Structures are given as structure tokens and as C-alpha cells.
Image (cartoon, rainbow, N blue to C red; front, top):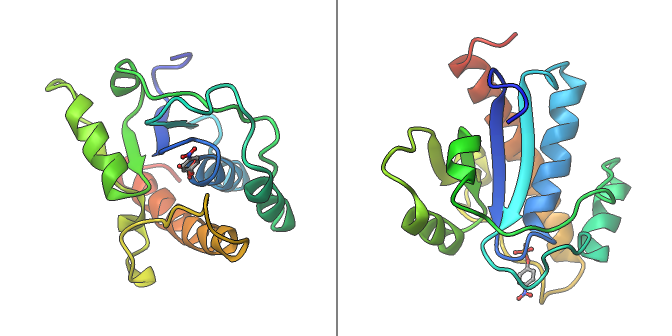
Length: 164
Ligand code: 4NP
């Protein structure tokens, strides 16, 4: 980690080409907008390795662009054990991702590992639905959920770490 003072936030899904890069782009944009880019580092990865090195899914990137987020610079990578040393918040898109992460979690990890949508309680859903095999409306739904949870997550981090 470049600056040990920074708070690391890692978004995790299955392929790291649809949901978690969307969360990465949206949350990073929110952090920058609030002037917190020097305090919070954002990254994303997948539990699977099928898409390692690939850019985000074209449909995810298009929906993000429609809402003003640029995902084009992102490339998929797979989660690795060292992520538990580098990130304070590890946020899973669904329960399957969370179970995979729980199975890797070292006992020394004292950060927060949980579902991302826990930070969007008003959404009424616990998981970001996987849009990969569905139609384009799935990607819009992902953006809605991710935008809501990003606001809640940033508020939580600001309170927990006394950021202004
Ligand atoms: P993601 O979506 O986990 O939101 O990136 C998926 C992408 C690819 C696959 C599954 C889900 N896949 O099976 O290749």
C-alpha cells in the first residue's frame, strides 16, 4: 500500500467485469467529489479468474457512462490473500462472493468483510443481482443499487474514521 494512512476499500464480485468494477467507478467518483481521494483508496476484483486482464463488460461500461462514470481504465483481477492485508473494507456483491471471501479470510484480518448492500438498507435487497446473463435493464438496476450503497458506505467510513 502506498500510503498506510489511507483507508482501503475493495469491491468483490464473481468476474470483476460487471458489478464490482461498477462499484469501483461509482465509489471512486464519489470519494473524489467529496475531496477524500487522498484518504480512501478504491479497488475491485473477482473471486473467479475467467476474465483476468479484461476491461469491464461493454454493457456495464455503457450504463456507467450514461450516468457519468468512466470504467474504461479498469482491468479485472482475481482476489488474492494479500488483499486482506491491504484493505480495511472488503465488500461482496452477493452471498456466494461473501462465502468465498469468508473461506479465505485470515484470522488476523480485523477489517470489515460483508455485503455491500448492507449500506443501502432502504433498497430492501441484500445482494446486487448478477446482470451478466440478463438484459440491459439488469445493468441499470446494478447502477441504482451501487449508487445508493456508495452513499451509505462513504457516510459510514467518514463517521468511523472521523473524516470530514
Ligand atoms: P460480475 O458478472 O461477477 O458482476 O462481474 C459476471 C461476469 C462473468 C461471469 C459471471 C458473472 N462469468 O460466468 O463469466
